Image (cartoon, rainbow over all chains, first blue to last red; front, top):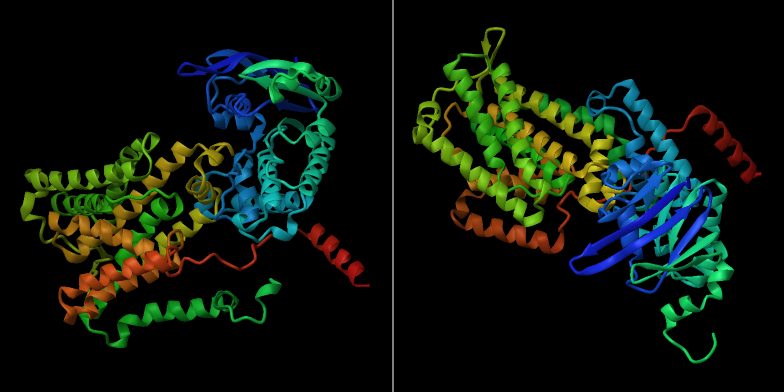
Amino acid sequence: MAFLEVKNISIQFGGLTAVDGLDFKVEEGQVVSIIGPNGAGKTTIFNILTGIYQPGEGEIYFQGQQINGLAPQKIVSSGIARTFQNIRLFPDMRVIENVLVGTHIQTRYRLVDGFLRIRRFRQEESEKIQFAAKLLDEVGLSSRLNDYADNLPYGEQRKLEIARAIATGAKLLLLDEPAAGMNPKESEELRQFILDLKKQGYTILLIEHDMNVVMNLSDYIYVVDYGKKIAEGLPQEIQGNKQVATAYLGESEVDL
Amino acid sequence: MEHFTGKFNLEELVYKYRYPLGAVFLLLLLGLPYLGLSQYVMRIIIMIGIYTMLALGLNILTGYTGLVSLGHSGFFAIGAYVTAILMLKLQIHFIPAAFIAMIITGICGLLLGLPTLRLTGTYLSIVTLGFAEIVKMIIMNWEPVTNGTLGLRNIPRPSFFGIDLTLANHGMYYFMLILLFLITFLCIAIKKSKLGRALHAIKENELAASMMGIYTARYKILAFILSAVITGLAGGYYATLVSYIDHNSFTFDVSILILSIVILGGMGTIRGMFFGSILLIVFPEIARPLMEWRFVVYGLVLIFMMRFRPQGLLGWRTTLPFQVPVNAQERQKRSGKHGISRS
């Protein structure tokens, strides 16, 4: 069984079928992209995967375990973390504090230990702070450690959101349009950054519109439109796919 | 941090001399009763202490977690009444009485916290407002227990080792200091643990917090419980201090005053709770000549504050560097690195 396996999921909002019988797979260590026009249901897929929405039908397996129907917190603990299309950092917290919130589920001491400030609390707290500082160093935000999250430039906020997701101990990262609003230089940096993550062994499921990022990064691509999968394949296969071009650009008399 | 050197930075200065300053402050607090202050002034100082406790309690809910409660007078009342009733009717000592009062207010906090599963923002505030009114109604109408609108009188003072704590022997003052110290310590401990970070994260962005694996509903209810317990303890102390309580001691105004302290001082800070309660308890006393104009001034202050300093008077973001502990190995590596870059 694949690392992440989604079988025939559907969800309806009133009369609208946002996701309609969708199947896809993500193998461990891969970067897999989901692309599609606006409103195709991509973010809804993420919301289903992370437990915010419960699918009306279908099953989701992560590392062989069924995760649909679990609470979002349980899904995070099982090793899936996400970022958001519209950045959702904790703006009034410092950069390192944002990452420390990410380590929440990895921090095992009981609350009473914190009140009594026993050794286990102090030790684990200091370990987590060191871990967070190291993580920030790795993603290139160590100079920003003391800053407040809302003072970071856009690209760094994106990076911080990814660092925070990594801090949960996740193995599968769901990145929702990480390159949105970035200039070409920033998105190139981001591509390099995601590639580094892949090398470190993270599995990445990506929603993205920036084709430079998608085509140069993905091991496999799924194309979604109106909640249905209209194509899947390797980047070069998708580039030549007529149906995909039609979904994005509409019918054309000229051969694309 | 480089970009702050050269500039006068009060926070850095205070942090640098925090031990001597803390010692001076502590000595001042301990020596306060011997400065020849009148009993009236001492009473105001004790009231500042009580309202600081109340503000610290509400701060956990409003400052840390971002849930605005308009009903903290309800918890205050429950704490005071339970303590008073237990001391009067069952003749038990203040400590166990206050302890039971804290448990009961904690349970009420849990019950009031349950609507947070469904309600947010203003709607939640309205529920808390209703809660305080219900508590008041129960106090007024449950005559066999609460003595109705006549209130409870002759509530005994706590006594330790046969010595009754009073205002005259400054026992009540020192007792207040101890409680305040414990509550402050608890609040700092909460703030500096994963609990404090989780609550702050919920305040900042609840969806993102739950995507970090934080059980937001549980933590919000926990915030309610902690907040209620602290408020209940302050209530118990208040009951023995004034020795007479009735439903009018716990009006909506009290809830608003606590909330004003939290907002004026600086939501989420601990220093702000002390400063806010000093201002808002002392101001009505020194402004007595202004008569009813006091409330106009009071309102104006709040309006101007909201406009020009919404984060509260002491609600600044700290510019002190975050303390990252360095273990021995890392330290060596770093100093090594430093040496290379210098040469």
